[in-house]
View 1 (cartoon, rainbow, N blue to C red):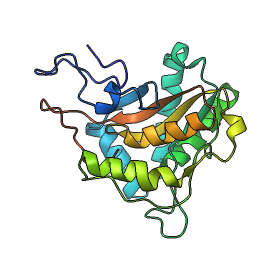
View 2: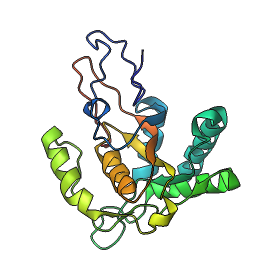
View 3: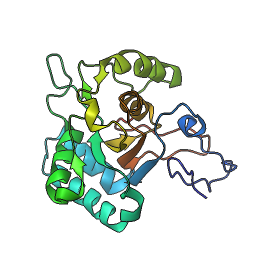
Length: 217
């Protein structure tokens, strides 16, 4: 058995068929479902760390190839989505990182899939840096998400999303608080549906606690 929203396997003892991810159980999450290529462990986790923190940018092409193959293998799932965007990063003055890892992967996806997808790396823009969520408890993460993160997000061209089913790319998902804010911005701009597509999803312990090594939100 798996969660119909995030795909988390619910077979471990104590799950009881209920996903421990709070957003999967809430109607106000703004995103409909999250597709995940893998879990945040092993080779994929190490590759992401090398890509984001060791400057090995060539990994972006490899991740894009994984996504392109995923689209091809599961084409029926995505045939009604019209636009592919991504969770934005702030790269201006005072930014923690001066480049956008997810945006770079999205650009490579655009090269690979060509006319099959409308890829827009600036579908949602982050106008200022926001506090990191890593290491915060639920209340702390929500304070960041619904406060400074929400205030920083804008959809500069609503005409691109009005009436569209939008797929949003991210690298890592822990519970979906960041995806929720991006999806909320897109829904307010007129998107009819927003779904997530992540390279890796964190696993959960039998106590229902997400592992958060290496970031994610």
